Structure formats: structure tokens, C-alpha cells
Image (tube, rainbow, N blue to C red; front, top):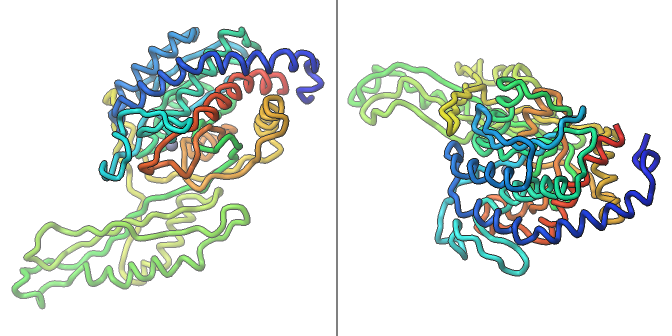
Length: 409
Ligand SMILES: [Zn+2]
């Protein structure tokens, strides 16, 4: 049953202007909150102050329950209906590489040409402000229906996407029906992305004093053809009709920290990006076939991750890709919500980068969709900013969406 059949046209005609008006009325508070978040430095694993600030706002907008979960995510709940919908936007930001490249102080929000500038505005604090203020609209207009809306200011996304969300689901036992990711989409819908995998390829040799190298065997020299072989695999990697060909690149090289010895071991990191559907074994087997004959081994290392609460969330450096069926009710609900607000459905595409969806959709099989006000071109750049009109539109979208989704399923 589609939404148009489940509720009357008058209902929508009446409701949509009210949601738009509420989103406009709340502009100042929403932007103040975003500015506060930008002022708080919140690198991965150091999100505590941003989490506390988000919890304060979730309480202020009237959530029925507000808490910090075991991974240190900020959560707010509205309602207790059957359809459990999670809105996920992360609070941690990429680190500033060179502050001299920034026109403004990255931690001092500035409004210019209708956009708010500052570190994390586009990734993903604009998304956090929009989903928190969607909760404000749901509460102000009493839009509760047969859904439970969970609004999450997430942690650990930049370094270990999906790990904090995994903790919410698997450790804290929160069951989710669907997930909406408030990452950068420029108000369009995203139904998937490639996965990524971090691998380590290792060669071993025999140590000897550098003054008599003929007694040793250099692991570094053994690595040279291995690096070449790994990079040469690119044109033959799996090719996907939507995501294109997988890629892999050698990104790091390490050995013993002894400049006066023949290196007894050498290890390189390989960053692999792959289309959905590939397992750890698929990736490992492919590389092993190439590097084994050259005397090297390959493995997927565990990534050490500690949350700001001190929880250890270590896990393998494997982040599967995912792709949601374009006919899935979640995509339909996204299109219907956009149509109701703007007269036409948002475009549907896929992301280039990885998100918390690697856990929700890639590992746990929870239907997941992306929608956000931020623009991908500003993500991780010194021009970090979010358009304030788009922020308002997104808040209206997130406010209407649960009603549409729960009404049609
Ligand atoms: Zn992000």
C-alpha cells in the first residue's frame, strides 16, 4: 500500500506546510546548536564533550529518553511504536592537516553566503543538527505514530566506521528495523557504497649487521617485487556494473627500526576498495595467489579501537560494501517524503566513500539509506561548510520521513 492510499491528500496538504514552518521557526536554535558543535574539537575517540552537548540538545527538544550507550554514542528516543528507525550522524571529525589552508579558524563557526563554515560542518555535524532538530519538529507538531525514532550522535566513524553502531546493536541489544545515515548527499538519496579492507602483506628475511650484509637476507628487497605485483593486480580486480572496478593501493611500508641492520622483516599496508558481496576470504585468496609465490604472507589485521568511555571495540579491518534494492520500501519512503516536500522525488545514487552503513547494511543486513544536507565536495577540505537552507530542508525531510515510512509499511 502506498502512502497516497493510506492517508488523505488533505492530510498531507495540511501537514507539509506546518513542517516547513516549524523547520523555519527553529532555524536560529538549530544553527546555534550546530555552531556549538563546531566549537567543540571532537577527533575520533575524543568525542565526549560533543556527545554531552548533543545529549543536552536532545533533552531540550523533548525526546522521551536520552542516554549515552556503551560505545559513548549520544542517543535520543521518541515514541515506542513497532517500526524502529535509527537516524545516524557522527560527531567525530577528520583532523585538520594544515590550519593555514583554512580561510577561517576551523573551530570558530562563521556564516557566509548562506552557509555555516567550520570543521565537521559537512562531515557530519550538519547532519547531527538536522536530525536533532527533526526530533524537535516531531515533538512540536506531535507527529508520533507507529514508530520509535532513535536519533544518534555517533562516535568513532572517521577511523572505524560501523564499530560504534555495531556496539549499539550487538552489545546493547538495540533492534533496528531501518537506518538513515545523515552523511553528505546534497539532499539526494544514497543506497549503497563500496567496502574497504585493510590488509598487511609481509616478507621475512634474516637479520645481520649492516657492516656484513652478505650474512643476512633483506626482507625489504624481497618486498619490492611483492609491491609491484600487488599494484599490478588492479586491471584484473573484480568489476561491478554500479561501483566499477575494485581498486587496491600500497599505502604504508614498515620494518625494524634499526638502520644498522639488514631488515629481517618488512610489512606493507594495502588499502582495498571493493564492491558489495565480497568476503574476507575472497579478498585474501586473490592477493595470496599473487604474493605467495614471491614468499610473502597476507592477513587482515585487527584494528584497535577505544571509545571515549574506555570501551575496547577492536575488530577486523574489513568494512563490507552494500547496496539496497532501489524498490525497497525504505527507498520508496525517501522518494515519497521528498516528493511531498519539494514536488519531485530526490535522485537516488551511491556514495564513493564508506560510512556506518558498512555495519548496518554490510554486516548486519539492516536496510540502510543515506540522505543529508551536506555536499560531498566540502567533506575533509578547508572549505568545510553546510548550506543553511539545505540544513532546514533536511530537518523537514527527517521530520516527515518516519510518518511516511511507518505509514507505508
Ligand atoms: Zn562522515
